[in-house]
Image (cartoon, rainbow, N blue to C red; front, top):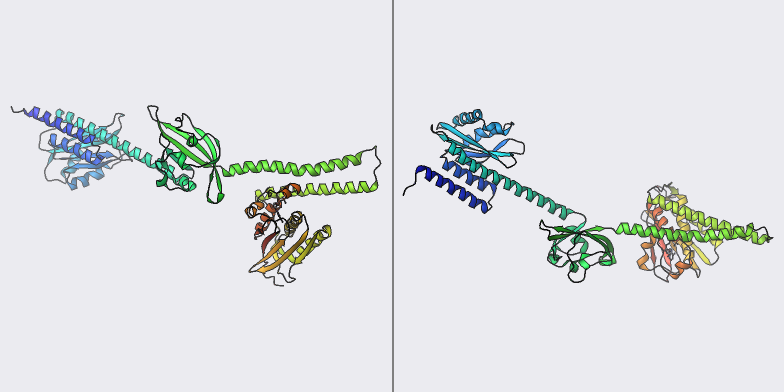
Length: 523
Ligand code: ADP
């Protein structure tokens, strides 16, 4: 039985829509889908050629898909569609006639019919239109238009899907870039707490490569010491899935015993059905914060300890002297007053050092640099120390023709005072203290050497930090706030030199510093 032309037409139409649905399901790219939709639409309504134009980000129309579209037509329509005007206007009867006349200027066959249908999304956003041209007098029927409506709807959905996919891709790329380039360590775990993603900052921090850790339980990847707070990666057995953000801290131990203290937060990510999808683990380096906290408490304990002794001595002696019920022996009065003066001096020195340290931290240490006779200054300082201290022998080994250095005199004296008083303080059994200087290239190298208790190599750097004191029995018996060498290094560096120590425990210590030679000062 042969089908009536109308039934044939319906049949064709159904087959086309089915085919489009089938292609849709195989999720092709947008251009393949639009080409298929346009091809079927054109065939069913018997169009000679046609195109789909989509709205651009600037609001104009651009031809993205053509059906047998002759190049001259494409060329004449492109600038016409690129006009800045509301896209709806392009569907108006009068504009369609204008398109026809433009097209007829460049094609041989005289086209008489054009049909256009906008591609409209559910939210009434117009994303483009289908335009079909036909020769001959036969007009597009309302049936044709209805049919094209179906194709236009399909095309609109395809455009929406493609846009959503594009949006998702951009979103994904953005999230990936944020994770990859984040200076903080980031790790994404699956619900079984195995590593799915690790970013560059974290693999660098942990000293592992991405391939080594992907798929491994996070407890095997992360090794922390001094752990505090909550850590999902360190729960015995299989931990219960987290229900909220948990936070813990700990130390990552790097090669060479260096430590980085990290704050780790574990945030669960749930799917729409409430199941755990991922755990996002972020690492923040809080080493400096921890150090600052420790420094603060050290500061308080050191300063209160250092203040207590002189203050209680001053109070004790002054209290005794103030008693009216006792007649004091003049020698006792003199000695007591002397102790009060010395202890007050110590307080002043401590306060001065603290002020200097805070100036240095604020970057406000001002210097009066001038060409200076270092040999003469060293001689003066050594003479002063030698008259006060008979237990040590002071040796000055400085050539008379030492060139002038660029330095601040008051600050350089402070450096010598600190180094010499340390040499005395940390040589409780006496011995020789040698101050030497010589020229090396464009600097004068000065050393202060003692025969005291010495300093273990692991402390050679740390002793130049503020409030740092080497842990030893001598430390408990000597006074000091651990500020002297911090000031020495800051002053020497501010004057353009450097300072370091060479020492072994029990072998004495040699503090060496350099200062730039003042220009044109050959004496
Ligand atoms: P302070 O002497 O007030 O403790 P410093 O900053 O001057 O502070 O010195 C820091 C630490 O370095 C001292 O506590 C001491 O342990 C060590 N030190 C400094 N100079 C010497 C030295 N000449 N010999 C041995 N140890 C030293």
